[in-house]
Structure formats: structure tokens, C-alpha cells
Length: 550
Image (cartoon, rainbow, N blue to C red; front, side):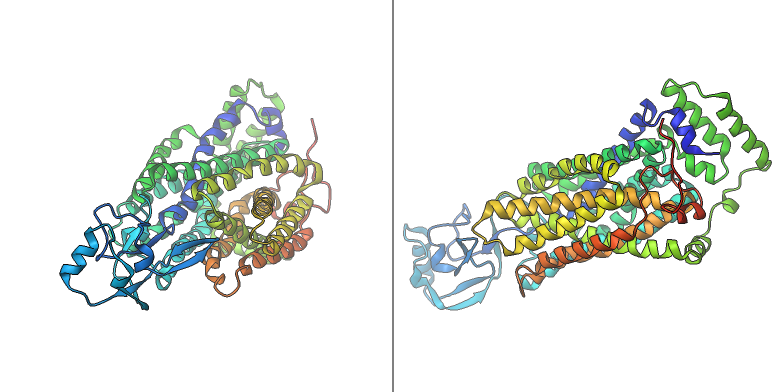
């Protein structure tokens, strides 16, 4: 039975699909906020040494006397106080110190030895924002690794969570995985908001994405399997819109609250509502058919047809009846679900799929490395970091529009390759633009993010179309898991700027262009039916497995 033909009869994207896309989209929106929340929870702050001899009750960050007590350095064409050094105080009497502190000429230069710089013992932070930096005084260059480690730990959790989500999804279903992942992530995020130490924060920073990594993959696979071939690109675009809005919502809430504990509670509490999806969201019909659960799949198809106002033909209904009679045995998920060993054996026996998985995994590494690297860099480009983050998130919207039209006009392979190469050119060009040409640097930066966003969206659709139903989420999970190597490395790239300021951008550009060339070896899947078996997946691009256009 050709399920694509049945979905075509039910309606590629009707009211039934629209309602379920809204439900899945809400979880995807939360997933986006979860995956990048560490940008603000572990965000660096502006701070300087606290000078106990001079500080008044107001604790001004830039008082008039500050240059007498703290050395300054040039940063972005502005003189800023050095963050972790101060001038050593001279040995003066307590009486004189009190006079210097409370009269109009507080802390004159004579109070300090300007030839003797010492480390701070405490710090004063600029503004009211609260992150783990001022929560636990994670300051100075020797502790910078603790901040970058947060993003890496988050992505290690995703690295582990992606394949687990894929295996669980292929065994127990897309819906169950989506609900478990969303609610589990919500619980971990709420517990993290109550962390009592940096170490406890890291533990739950790891456990959160172990759950949350299944939200996007399970939701994406489920949404793609709900629609017919002609609506797959539209479906991928809508899911991407939800992810983009999730990033923008994260930036807006972070700007409003400016407190990492409150931010996590507002972001993660709504995830608990997704437990109701167990009753409102249907399971994937493709997965049900692959597991032999024909009766349940038939009921969902009938419900979808009714919701879309479609009357199914007798021929379609008879196909379900014939399959149900042919089975003649009770459903047994334990025996019908593919084990991990069987999944690996099928991939290893197929040289075509094995090479495809390896190439796809490298493509994922590149895209996640560049995508998250540029997102993290956006908060340090200059100006208001919250506004920058929101703008860099919203630049994804026109990218999704281009993706929608380019995918069906030029095909998956050409769109993926061209967007990767363009992102690489933009990143490398950015490194050669003088720092005083802000408008050109921002233009190239946004162009790079625009292009890699197209790549990210294409690779999700492309990956689901290149592998068979029984292995689809497992292999998507494998590619996404390996891809997390890129996002694990991305938070560490600011440390490379100590050796060469443009080194991260050269890495972004070089990997993008190389992956763009490698992606040309993928088969074209435009208008192909989703493969249900290994043989069909191997033959994509070799023989006409086309869906009739109606």
C-alpha cells in the first residue's frame, strides 16, 4: 500500500495537519529556547574591581575617581577599566582614608601606587543583569573556561540525547518520544533554575538537553510523516518558523527579566503542559504501519479525512482491510520493533547508506558548528546584546522563505550546496573587513547566518527523505548526534581569538565550503516518495520513485 497516495487523497495539508502542526510547533518553539538558553544564563558581564577604600553607597560603575584606582585598556575604540586588576593602595592612615573617601576629592591618585597592579578580591558589576557570572563570581581570564564549558556541556547532552531519542522513537513512537522529551526537559530546566552551585548547574545543564534533544527530531519526523510529498517543504518551513520565533522569544524574555533563574522558570514551566499531547496529538501513521498497527493507523487516516472534509474511496478503505486480514496475528511491539543491532546491521550491509550517513554526519557537524558559532558571536558583535540576538534570530525568517521556494525550484542538493558555499564566503570575507566598517561587517555577518540557516533547514528535510521509514528517526538521530560535535566546539571558539582574532571565522568559512562540495554527492530527492524500505532508500536518484502530481 502506497501511503503517499492515501495522504494525497486525505489532503496534503488540510485542517487536520494544520492543527497538529500548531501543537508540534509549540514544542519546537520551546526547544529553540531551551537549546540556546545558556547564551544568557552563562552570559559574560561587564565588571571591574571593587575598591573598598573608595566605593560609596551607590556603587557607581564609572565614578570620577576610577582612573586613579584601576588601570584602563582600549576596547572597541573605548577606554574601559581592566576587569581583574587594580592599583595597590599606599600605606596611609585610616583617618586620611576616611577623608579621601567622603570628601569631594575622593580617592585621589596619591592613594594608589600606579606602578604596582594587584589582583582584585571582589568585583562590581555594571547593570542589573544576573547570570551565573555574578551569582558565583566566575570572573577573569582564568575562569573564562567555566563559562564556555556550559555551552559545551549542553551540547554533550544533545550528543547523547539525539541517538537515544531516535532509538526510542523508532521503538515506542514519535508522539510518546515528543511528550517524554518535552516534559522531561521542562522538569530538568526547572530544577536547574534552583541550582545551589556551579557544579549542580552543570549537572542539570547536561540532563536538560539529554531530554530536550528529542523534541525537535521527534517533532520534525512526526510532522513530516503527517503530510504528503507536495507539502513536505511547506511543513519543514513551518517547523523552522516556530524554531526561529522560539529564539526570538528567548531573547525578548531574557531582555525583560535579566535574571537567569527567573528566565529558566518562565521558559521551562510551559513544557509541562505538553503532557496533554498524549491525548490530543495523533501518532505517525507511517510508524504505525511499519510496526504493523494497521487498525490504529486506519482510525487516524479516517479522522484526518473527516477533519479535512474528505470522503475516502472504497479502494483506499479496502487496502486497510486487506492488510489487517493478511496480518492475522496480534500486534507485538517487542518482536516487530527493530533492535539496535538490527538497525546497525542494515546500515552496515548497505554501502550506499553507510557512505550517505558518513557524508550526512559531516554536513551536520559543519552546519551546527557554523550556525551556533554565529549565534553565540552575535552577542559580542557590538551594541545591545539582546537586540543583536533577536535580529540574528529573525534574519532566519527570510532564509526560510528562500528555502521554501528554492527547495522545489532548484532541488535539495543544489540548495544545500549553494547555501553552504555562500555562508563560507561570507564568513571568510568578514575576517578581512576593517573593524571601522561596521555596516559591511554586519551585512556579511547576517548574510552568513542567513545562508547557514537555509542549510540547517534543508539538511533536516533532506535527511528525513534519504532514509527508510523503519530507520528514519534512528539515522536522523545518528547524523544529529555526530553533528553535535560542531555545536560542542562552537562555544569554545572565543578562546581561539587569543591566538588569531579571525581564526573562528576562517574555521566557519573553510568547513562550510568543504561541506558544500561534499553535499553534491547526495541523491536528489525532489518529488520522490518517502522510502519505506532500505532498497527504496538505496535507489533514490537511480530510478523513478516519483509521486504523481495531482
